[in-house]
Image 1 (cartoon, rainbow, N blue to C red):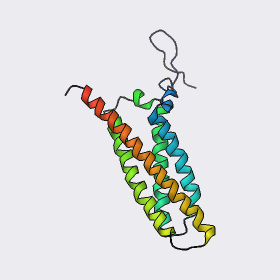
Image 2 (cartoon, rainbow, N blue to C red):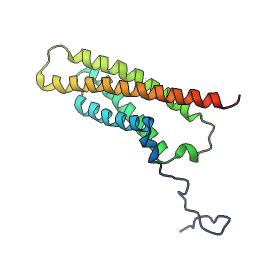
Image 3 (cartoon, helix red, strand yellow):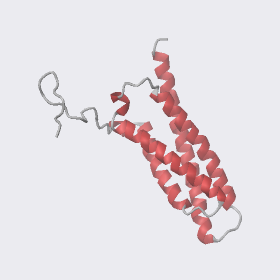
Image 4 (tube, rainbow, N blue to C red):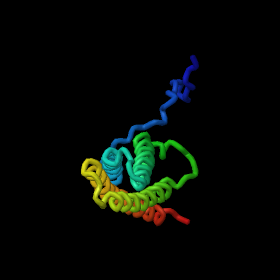
Length: 163
């Protein structure tokens, strides 16, 4: 078994010492929106499954991809990965673009979901799929609000940094 490397003071450094749990982020509006997006995404996926019509395949694809992307961002903030990595990445701009793309995709997905299930199908399958589309509307609004908050944060950070 290998030992952790020693620091300057002679103490051994833990291999995961760079991980800092940051729960305070989820008390901010952006953090709360991420949690809301995840919860709405779970509801969207649960209501639209199984995908019986072609449009629902698109809706579920968008819901799953958005859920995975948001979950990755949640872990980036929860574990303070942004602060730990010294990569030349503009994190805020990357998140603005990601969230903006998810907003547009959710917008198209809920339109497809609601339009494909609006004709008279069996009530057993129709009601949960209409509910999925409605929750898709709410999630599109949540992603839109997240995009706006991130955009204002990005603009304020670029205004304060010298060129």
